[in-house]
Image 1 (cartoon, one colour):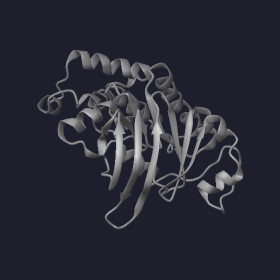
Image 2 (spheres, rainbow, N blue to C red):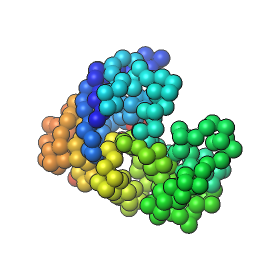
Image 3 (cartoon, one colour):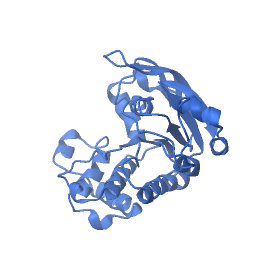
Image 4 (tube, helix red, strand yellow):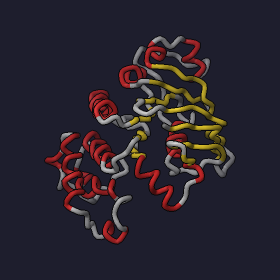
Length: 263
């Protein structure tokens, strides 16, 4: 279980990205984070695995405070928490297989990883991960030869290589068309339901949020302003919508929220 207690992040330029946020994520949940661009969604996800250093607060992962972890302790936590990025974060000139094997870096000696020396068991595992997302035929291609949807599937396969207990997905479908968006979220849903891996994902289209989430939290200007179940998000009132997106926000249709997130 993940528990966030009074989490605050203030950047060096004085920007307050997160303000005293507290919530829990139960094992096996598919938690979706919604909010405007700059609301703090990406900052929140990146604080959880310490890609960004929190300013104050606690990040309790199965009872251990990630915010205070260092060295070996932090590496062990990061093994258990996979990450999927909006812009894929692949090594473009490397093969798909090499990118997927990068998910095992926390398990092999640094010297071995630099030389791309991975045991046969890891290579077999990588092939199985690619098989799960349907791109075994792309294994030897360079990552930059793949389409955006294929690259995101490589990102999912790489995250699975960590044997994670939780996966953080930072706007994983923001750069994809609607059909591909459903495809990628379908893979995450399968991972969540059939592998019992907790998913914490930021999204901004209401139809996707309604279809895939088990619970939702909403951020606005770094504050936690909404918490609700899947059933509750399906019945979101205009007042609740405006609490997250502002008084001037308008729901264009049932499938539209707004914005990405640069914070």
